[in-house]
Image (cartoon, rainbow, N blue to C red):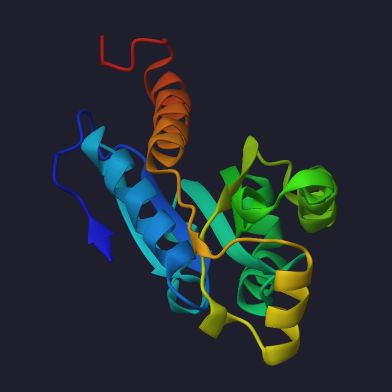
Length: 192
């Protein structure tokens, strides 16, 4: 999906891509929302599944995200990062993970911080990302195996849509401000 509603100021401007890997649609919806918010700021942005990124060298900025299953990114996202590690090390990179932290209750909430450090541990050292966010997605009974549903219920977790659109939009704004500072060398984000 390509999102470019506003022309870029200046010559060419940065080209950003929101790369994602997901299974049930939450990660894709978050990726397209991030891309749309960046495009609203005048940043040429695309949202693409990890396996559909043709020429990664065509992008200046990467926002890479994956659904988290068993405390790990999906293989497609990890393969994209491994294949393009040298290129990504020289670009501005932000990471996001989509799991179920908002569905957790009581003592299970403590797992969020542990999961986040486990999920991006190796990626952070390899890519030196400018930031990482852990977002909640949608969790429904049909997303889990029978054993997964039993475990989910035993933990007292709740099914539902936990996407926090204001938080996702705010993070896109943070990324947009950082891109503008790099592009124009000032906090205002507009050309001199």
